[in-house]
Image (cartoon, rainbow, N blue to C red; front, side, top):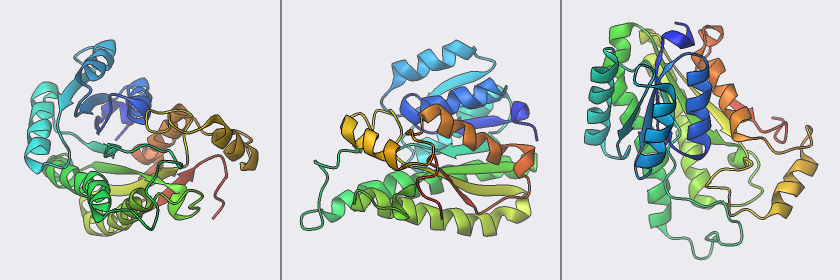
Length: 254
C-alpha cells in the first residue's frame, strides 16, 4: 500500500518529534490522525493546516486502552476507513537534562513505571486496538520510536533507556506474531534531536559535543529523523519487520 493510501496514527503528534512525523506523512499524501493528551490547541492547528480530508486531531492518553479504542473509532468514523499505520511516538513526561536526571543511588521504581507505561503499555494498547482494522484491510504498519541510548548510554537515563529497550523487545515479538496478517513492526531509534520539547533543557555544549563525535558532524533534526520512518511505511519495506534502524548521523555504528 502506498503511503498516500494509508491512514496514519501518530501518538503525541502535536509537538516536537511527533509534529515532524505528522508533517512527513502528510507531505507524502497520507491521511493523518494527530493524537494529543494535553496539547489540544497545537494539535488542532496542525490538523487544520491540512484540512479535514487529510488530518484530524483526536485526544487520548495512550496508556488507557479505553481511550485508545475511542480514538481509533473516532478516526475510522472521520475518514471512513480504519487506521492502517501506527507510529508510537508519545513520550511520558521526560526531560533530557543530564544534570537533573535521577542517578543510580536515588532513582525510584515509580520513575521506571511511568516510562514503561508510556513506551511499552502505550505501544501495546495502540497495536492491539488497531489490529482488527489492519486485518480488515489486509495491511498494517507499526513503527515504534526508540533510542540509541541502550547501545551507547552516554548519559545514563536509567528509566527512559530501560523502557525503550523493552519496547525493542516488544517490537520483535510483535513482528513475529503479526507477520501472518501482513502487519510489519519496526523501530526507528535516534539520539538527541536538535531540538524538541524534551531536549530543550539540554545545554548547548552537549549538542556541540555530540556533533563533534558524529561522522556527519551535526546533530540530527526532528525532520531528518521523521523522514526515516517513511521507509518502514513504504512499499520498499514490505519485506522488512522486527528491525531497529538507528538514525543519529552515524554516532552509533553497530
